Image (cartoon, rainbow, N blue to C red; front, side, top):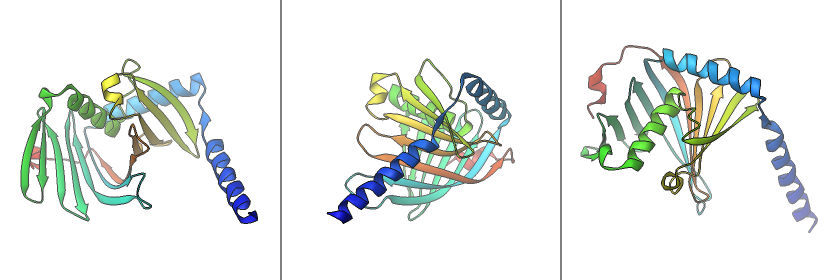
Length: 210
């Protein structure tokens, strides 16, 4: 019993610490933060970055980890290359989603689905950091240990069925996204950590041929 009580207090303390780390921004801080992010986002013509993705499923004791490279070119060319533990790539291009599953290719027309179009806009916006649209989301802003955190709750009921909340973590100095977290309508979520970013290097359109 003592052990259970100790573990409960330990978990409770950890939760309190986690909540204490998130501090709500003031209106002035929100204005300054959004201005910084938008200034940087407008300067980003291309972006390539390594990523590690953690898929949390409620029924699994351990998150599913995958890794690869993400490449973006304005206005809306985007590729996710999964390299470990399998080869899989997704390209958003010309209103289509191009999929290459270890040589097996397929395509989905985004134009045929409003939900795909919205998700595409979300992904591109989350990469560039340019998605502070109050018409689409209810947004809240926090400071967390030298980083800034923006939480987006979709207002659209259809989108809410797929994505309950989006959390973007920004490097405070660079004002660029370093982590994307997508919370689903269940307790499951996907967390993507971006690292080794290269901004505005030359990227040929052929990269997005898939």
